[in-house]
Image 1 (cartoon, protein in one colour):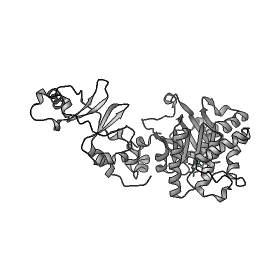
Image 2 (cartoon, helix red, strand yellow):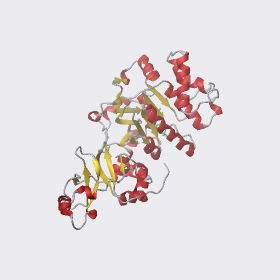
Image 3 (cartoon, protein in one colour):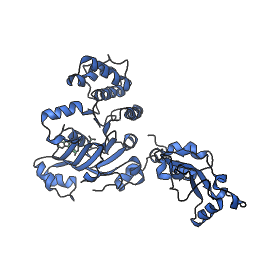
Image 4 (tube, helix red, strand yellow):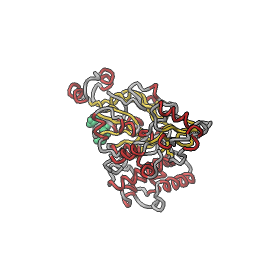
Length: 414
Ligand SMILES: Nc1ncnc2c1ncn2[C@@H]1O[C@H](COP(=O)(O)OP(=O)(O)OP(=O)(O)O)[C@@H](O)[C@H]1O
């Protein structure tokens, strides 16, 4: 099993678990077949899933999977059909009983909970959105949405208020009295989303929620989910077999194959450093500009200067370091602008300060700004683009580099 070096949780995984993790899954196994528990303990890691099936008749649906999901993070599990995604997400809430491992929600061990505790956690802490919506066909939209609140024993006034809030949030105001079959697929899935949000769960699990939708509606739903997540900041686990969808909605993405995680990383990690050919194949058609950020094309500054420094001193330093430009900062290390050797006049330098040649009108972006958003900056003006993190310049972007990365795209829509 291979893992990316960045942002990952390996099979042991525990040392990498962030302090703000809401959901922690450690060494989780689900084996279908007789003698499943013994097999999870003793299976030879070198054997493939097919070999294990042929030798024992057991299916290793989930094989020693570890990961954590931080507060407010959208963690995507992406894999082809049969890779084990649905089994894994169902194990998290024990809709399927895992064979081995640990699942902790806010530090509580889900796998040792009794039925009552489990019911409580499913009612209050965790909600699931399914591919085929899972709405009650005989209930109206409003009734569907309040159902989870009724189960919680919440009073009627609060039920109505809360339902109205989430119906508004998912854009279904005015449709409260309709039945699910009167709605389009996208709208039915928004009912599913509203039902899940109504109970105000800390963790939302999505099992291929948009797979049954037409491509355009699907894209629209992805955009809505991203917008919604910015507002509600829930901890989300999102299952999909679509790599572009995974990159679009995920803060981090785990690639799953034959029951195991092959690589975990941010969309940018996966696209810029695929760990093997299996992952690389998925990344081939990805439009780089929608995934890569300013951080990945910037060059960290090598020479810093202050505005009052003598221009001849700076020129000597730049020449000695074989560098064409310097970043100018103030006394608090805050970014002021850049200075370029090409702008230094041939004479009179001895009495000039850096201030006389600063380019202080260069555009600034944040490290996480997607490349596609740099395009208008890259094609106008000639100063480099500065990357600022909390006011400090952590890099500059050469416009040619940004444009080259943009031009290499094949224009796949995400
Ligand atoms: N109840 C079961 N009994 C035996 N094997 C099962 C059972 N449920 C799932 N499997 C097997 O476990 C493996 C993982 O299945 P799972 O449905 O989790 O994959 P998936 O990635 O969600 O696929 P899909 O996208 O097609 O739903 C498959 O080989 C499947 O045949």
